[in-house]
Figure 1 (cartoon, rainbow, N blue to C red):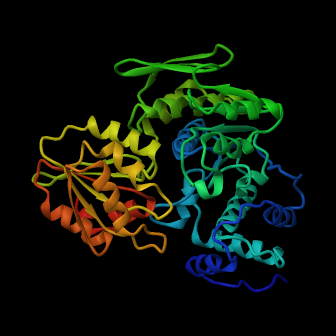
Figure 2 (figure 1 turned 90 degrees about the vertical axis):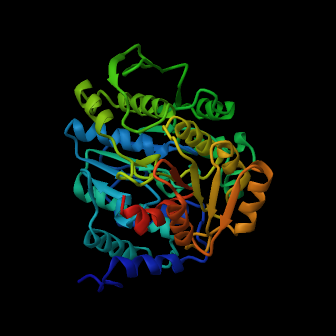
Figure 3 (figure 1 turned 120 degrees about the vertical axis):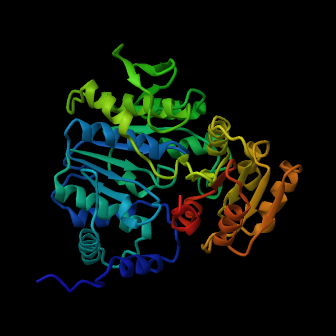
Length: 436
């Protein structure tokens, strides 16, 4: 008879996982690999019973997974998707056939992991990764989509050998873990590539080390602008693949921004690499492009008459802030643009603020309800340096900042809320945004 379950609720399991390992992040694979082998000894090392696409990169990972999930589901495949972090509830991280994993399923998976881990002090993310993989195996998914949490080479999802690996983009983030230069970061991201298998690169100007590393290990690099490309017109776009295959008259991606063409094109390249095993008709591709959804990525909430428009975005690094600024400039606004900003302490405040300095007239700052929140003086210093013409007001917490922005805004104004997943989560839970 199996040992009794350590905890009965998902909240209890997650709170315990936060304390189990002395470090929040521990980038090593030996422990998690060993636990996975004990959890599913019937599987070959590094393998799932189905094809796997692993998606990494600094920005664009979530979008690429969203496109792939939409396409495979539209084609009728049973698809498992593992992503992180979440916005409102942990269950968002594990989806099977479009449905969030239930509390019961997650608790049962955590209990199975706990029974076989021995003395291994798994991290919160490692527990979550193992649970997702376990649930995918038990559900018999036909395709598994795995989003890298941090880096790639030593990220927990990398215990599984990807049939296709996709790196959406390379930018500056998590320097303490991945390195200070783009070339160093590229080596870490390239760790998800495998010999003899497709290594899709979704960035035209990706650091040269990314492609070089793919070639060094014998992977097949397929880079945007070289092996595949896209072109857009007013209301549709076209895609050309590595083997000359073309998809024409595709609908504009439902996710906003010109950078989404890059993400969709890279995801489509990954999809086509598995075309012989999992064919997806163009009708499913068109349907997925029109229906794809991804919370917190330039989510526009037009207010009712007499209320301002809200825009929510998780952008928290220079690359994402540039894309956000480009999107924001395209949204009609006859009034002022106000911003509510909260960052985590490991981010570069100046790099995040600078691209938006010329678009925002008034800033409201407030620390998120997180031990990792950036102190407001650091954000204020960045605003002083790169947005000297702007005015701002600092608040005791993020909820007060949201309320102040809502109270100040006039009907034609736009309120941008950005800076992290916890920032957008706070906005979605706020009465100010809930009323929209």
